[in-house]
Amino acid sequence: MTRASDGVTRALDGLLGRCAGLVPPGRRGWAEAVRAEAGEVPAGAARLGWVAGGVWLVAREAQMVRRIGYGLAVAAVAVAAALVVRYLWGGAHPGRDAGWDKARVVLLVALAAGLPWVGRRRGVFGPVGASIAARVVRAGGCAAVLLLVLDLARIEYYPGSGGVIWPGNGWAREAVALGLIGGCLAAVLIITARRPRHPVLVAWCVAAAGLVLLLTVAPVQVLITVYVAGILALTTRRSPVTPATLAICASAGVAGGLLVVALWNPTRSPAAPGLHKQTDVRLLFVILVAVIAAGTAAAGAVAVRRARGPGDPLVLRSARTWQCLAAGPLTGAAAALMLPLLRASAAVHFAAACPAARHGQCTAASGVWMLFLVAGPVLGLAIGSVAAASTASQPPQLPLPPREARPGGSRSGGVFVRNS
Amino acid sequence: MLVLAALSGAPADWRHGYDLAKQTGLKSGTLYPILVRLADRGLMEARWEEGRPAGRPPRHLYRLSTDGLARAQAALAAAPVAAPPAAAPRRGASPRRRGLAGEAL
Image 1 (cartoon, rainbow over the protein chains, first blue to last red):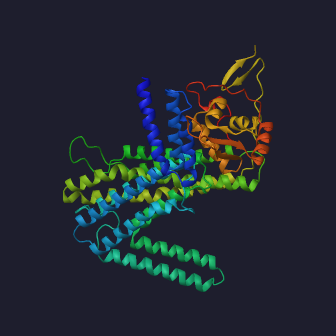
Image 2: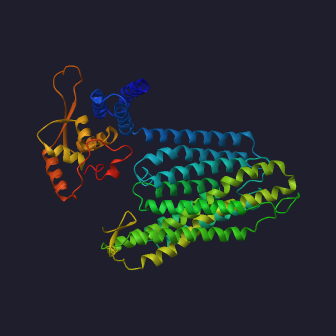
């Protein structure tokens, strides 16, 4: 046993010596300090623990966990981008404008490639907050979005699937797009002419018009970008959203999304014995709204409970408002992300197997997913705004009074202890 | 707190890591990050042992700086009275469970 322990200790000591080079030059002395004193520690488990602590110190100082996580993120994005390009060039279905499709996917790949870089820079989108909730929500959210991109690419460009956005083609689609572009330009011109002294309003109008134009040209790309930007902004170190809000809303959203997935059957009618009837989409929407409301209410309640005590009322109000405003979209987005992730793969296979008569059903199912992806955060923002208005108007509550000691004993660690 | 208490016990003396670990009951993976933070904030001085001691490599030595000593004394005076640290850590007991050992400041 001692011989084995000594062997492990020597191996760890060697590892410590080699890994010390990963630490920034000004901090390498700390790793050397641990090694220098290992000989003083009694041989056996104690020395092994000492050297293992040194390895942990090096991993901590070299930020190895962060480096490994960053490397994994870069690899995941690269793989997803490569797969999307492969799907695109592998088979755009007939009748679509392949040039536009390729341009859209190149834009999506460019956005995805910038994701790790943006997430690491100090600013609105990075770096990630110190809490476990922030890290889990950011990693899980970005992974879900990457999988969503892959599934969308598979459906969008699968021959015969009908596409997800703008199914079909022809003059009607082009007319709608031209109408939107014209309307946006007209709105900007009118507002600029009527309110020339309101540069902020004009700027917002231009931004909104630009967003509408982008939505017209590349809707999936804009949707994905908004999702990623939201996830990064909510989980950054400067975000006013607390870890409790992140944890509550992400959990509620994922659970609600899984419930919707379990209840949802996108097939219209039983073509074969044993298949269930198509689920009413309105029921799924009711569930989605209920989940968002529950997650927002829970997060708001936690925010009110935590933001007690003497403090600046404006600060308390701002903190509560932020929790509610973020809780709704976060819950809705988490629930909506569950739908395509778990259903899209099945739909691709369904589209491959089903005859031409069912392509409309595939398209309808894809449309429902996209509707959920848009409606989830929008509904969440609406519910969160209502919750924020009602929560922020409440007066700041006094701090909880200290619990009075019970006669004959007291509580310690949740256990009643009788006085002896 | 335990580290501050150990270092402020004899502020003029240079202490080495294993000596502090024995006194505080902290393991190296807990003790050294605390020392690193103390040194980063200028609360502790660190240097290598001079010369070449016989039979062992030179040690890394630590003691509180003037500012660190003042802040340690203030923090220790404001802290609630804690039980004296055990000479050896109980197996399986984390520093946080044992009290304030995990807190550097």
